[in-house]
Amino acid sequence: MKHAFLAALAATAATAFPVWAVERGEVLDTYADIAHAAYSDSLQAARKLKEAVDALIATPSPETLQAAREAWIRARVPYQQTEVFRFGNPIVDDWEGRVNAWPLDEGLIDYVEMGGESDENPFAGLNVIAHPVFTLSGREVDATRITPELLRETLHEADGIEANVATGYHAIEFLLWGQDLNGHAPGAGSRPWTDYARGDDCTHGNCDRRAAYLSVVTDLLVEDLEWMASQWEEGAAARVAVTADESAGLRAMLTGMGSLSYGELAGERMRLGLMLNDPEEEHDCFSDNTHNSHYYDGLGIANVYLGDYVRIDGTRVSGPSLAELVASQDPTLDIGMRQSLMETMMALGRIKSAAEAGLAYDQMLERGNAGGERLVMDGVEALIAQTRWIERVVAALDLGDVTIEGSDSLDNPGAVFQ
Image 1 (tube, rainbow, N blue to C red):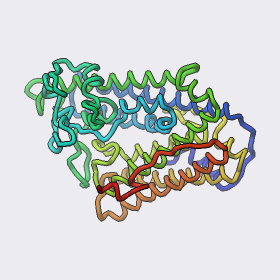
Image 2: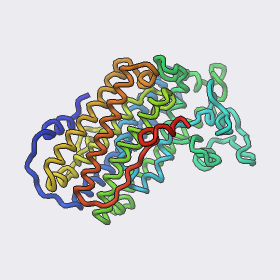
Image 3: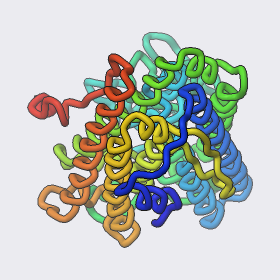
Image 4: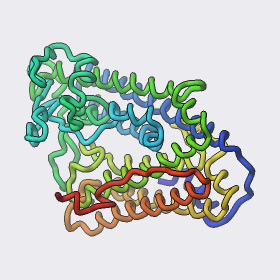
């Protein structure tokens, strides 16, 4: 679990270090460089996932299915480190729902044993894989061919319902693992490899259409990541937007750090699930990979503050950092921020270690599991404390109004049960 950045944090969290003056524009350049590297790594990992998916479709077997699952898990590592770029950058936030939307009503896509059509979502049991023709919002849809346009333009968020997720990592995750029907008991989804077999070996029917859907949705993920990686190149839209105005760019950095830390991760992804004791509220719910998603989200926040990102090939992207800028204004504030980041990563690391030792995240959410609740709440509390330090950084840099997204689970708990 040790990571090079933890060593850097530990070395400086309690002691001031020599401060070299950095310019705000240089800090923003580092931020954009890290964004470009992380999205490029995500793209590279998605291409590897596509290769594994193609192998599964060409030669279905337990081995090729497992290889595709492992490629999906590896692909999550760099992508989760990009989520810190979401909330302060509209170009990312407007795009993100295509690649990482959750939770999803998976019955829209394929067969389910639990769930399906409801008053809230009449399409939650549509099962497009089993229905080459269906009616959606009063019109007949010809889905004989599963195409990018069908997934992206017709099915994704169909009828304006956000739970109708037809594209992205979690749609792929469902197609590789299937539903996790274990509740709070051990075990992830267990889709059989024969769901992609041919002829009489095919289970649950429509194996050819299931394979077509998996192929197209993975192609779309690669395409979407190609686009986003390109937006952070020199002279491209996302980089220009964040570097054109130094104060606005720093606000974007800190909005992303604070909103991911507080409302999104501490609130919607962690505290809410614990309040509801609901295993469906875990982020990577089909694969039981949530512990990694939380950990690498936290790491993404630390990357941005420290101006340092370790790429999937082991090389580093680093430069003048927000940490150095803060230290030049208030060395004690920088020490506190680093200490808080380290405490957060240690808390998220304990969740990760416990899951790798056999206590999956959905088991931690079970009512009465005091040890699991303590692990999750330690993470929540560390993230909240970290957000308070982020707010102090905003004030110290005199950046004006920075809106950090909240969550009812943290700000108005009674509303969760209404």
